[in-house]
Image (tube, rainbow, N blue to C red; front, side, top):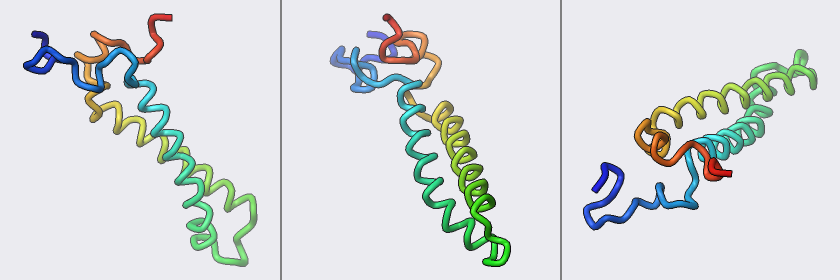
Length: 101
């Protein structure tokens, strides 16, 4: 029994052959995080920049910066906390689902 197998000899769901790997998980969650923060950043920008200073360019820039920052921080957080991104798991199964292609 290896460290990644259960006592019955089965692999946990996260390590089955077609399951998502570290890069797949990071990419998907970062994209959704960026999208959500872009949508949330728009009203935050209109609140931050009071109406006389609230130009479309400022609001868009604020929203974009918010979403990019959130996506980057989310990617880093997942890399350090998700079990599929552990050194042991990456060494055994690779970082992407289709690494063998």
